[in-house]
Amino acid sequence: MADDVLAWLLASDPALRWQVMRDLQGLPEAQWSDERARVETEGWGARLLAAQDPDGQWAGGAFLPRDFDPREWVDVGQPWTATTYALSQLRELGLEPSSASAVRTVDLVGRSSHWEEGDQPYWTGETEECINGRTVADGAYFGVDVSPLVARLVDERLPDGGWNCERAEGSRRSSFATTVNVLEGLLEHERATGGTPASREARRTGEEFLLERDLFRRLSTGEPADPEFLTFQHPSRWHYDVLRALDHFRAAAELDEGVPDLRLADAVAHVRSRRSSDGTWLLDRTPPGRVWFHVDDGVGRPSRWLTLRALRVLRWWDEWWGEPPEETAGS
Image (cartoon, rainbow, N blue to C red; front, side, top):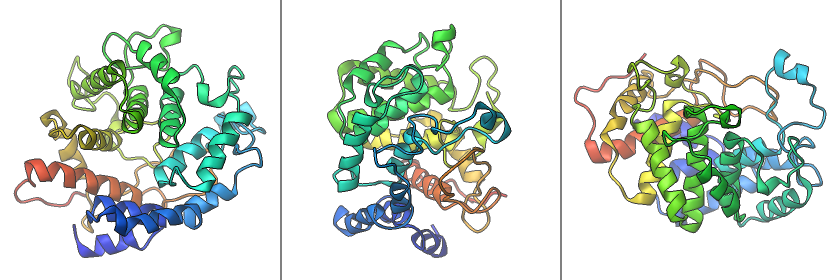
């Protein structure tokens, strides 16, 4: 990693800076904990917390803003300002779960927020697996007991080992996107509690669903299942791409103390090939729709978040398997 790329990453928001210090510089917690604490009071974290409603929600709703009009989804895109996406973004930023803001938010959301789909209390989950996977991840991260929701997700696993948010409509084939959302939730729950034998087995089969497909291929033909899986998006929201999946496998291997599976090699090579000549990764796409604020400089521009993700994936992979010879930057 070039010194100028590291300096560029560090000259950013506390939310990104503390993760660079931990994941790329390999510094001990004592050297990045103060930086992480600043997420609550400075930069993107403080800005998102300042947008919170008095009742603990964002934009007056669990999944949708209170003022949502269905025409907005068609004309502008899915809005990302309601509670579920705010919580997921605070988790990505690394808001300390023990901070006063996090403790207050968890309590208020539990008492005030209900899903629009069926008026269920927020932390009991909705009906869709993709939403519930993220709810488990956010709840487990912030110290909520989401074990009943984890048990539901385990029971909703499809025969091929993964999940699909259209299961209730009859789908029997897992989706890459739904599966990665559930896997991130199960991993966060396992990190917080140790999980259960059933949830650990479900994570294993869900990961195997992705590994059998090299993270992006159709099992039937070997061709990419979706061209967008090989492009890089931030924020991920509910969407899937190979960089997001690789970052999950990196985090899972840290918990499991496992060796990177060689079936990840093609996805890793693709990520490596997408590095620009200046050592950064460009933002290919960002989901359209209402947001509180942007954390990247725009599509086609270098993205600090994608660069952090890519570099920590490559650092993890190369520690085990080494860098390829005559490595060159991609276009």
